[in-house]
Structure formats: C-alpha cells, structure tokens
Length: 133
Image 1 (cartoon, rainbow, N blue to C red):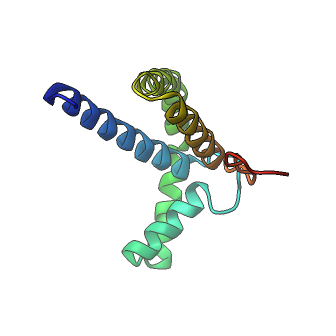
Image 2: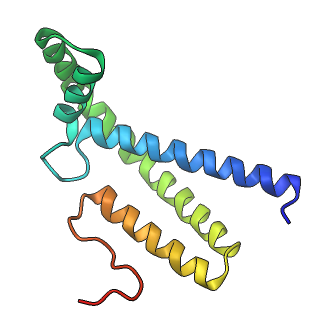
Image 3: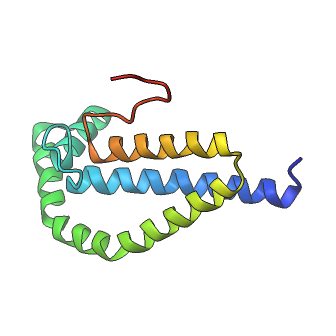
C-alpha cells in the first residue's frame, strides 16, 4: 500500500506531467512546431480563441499579428528550455517504470509511443499488443 509521502509524490508527478503537457500543447499551438500545417500554429490558436472568445475579424487579425510578432521569441525560449524539459520527461518516465510490473512497463511504453506519435502529428499509430498487419 502507498504511504502518504509516496502518494504525495505520485500526485505531484501527475500534476507536473499534466502541466508539462499543457505547456507543450500551448507552445506547439502557438508556434506550429509539430510540422503539420493543417490545424496547427498561430492560425489554429487564433481560430480557437475566435471560437472561445467570439473575436471579431479585426480582433482575430490583431491576435494573429501578436503571435507573429512574438514567434521568434517563443521559438528561442523553447529551444533553450526543450533539452531540460526532455531530460526531466525521460527521468520521470524511468521513475514511473521503476514502480511498474513488467507487463505495466510494456503498456506504459506503448502509451508513451502513442503519445509521441500524436504529439508529432504522425498519421500512423503504435500497434496494440497482438495486432496483426
């Protein structure tokens, strides 16, 4: 059974993982870093904000210009932060794996691979266990 400190550590880890994912999504959406043109980048973010905030066409143009004006700053910051983020992500995954059974580790690896495919915008998906060609 988990003691209180392990439970707190697991909760913190989950919170960090979710925050990291949200930050990555925001940066990717704001800068178009995933390589796909469709539904990504500043235009996607402007469309999202337009829907959620009911922006006028003039406001949408202004928001798009703001993203364009700050794009190089965002890219420069992300290029500095990304190696550290990737390092932490690798350590977190290794620490999670250390808590899992071999079967759980295999499933966790598949989940990680599916997440990475989704993040990169790959149209292919990691095959589930037992899947055939």
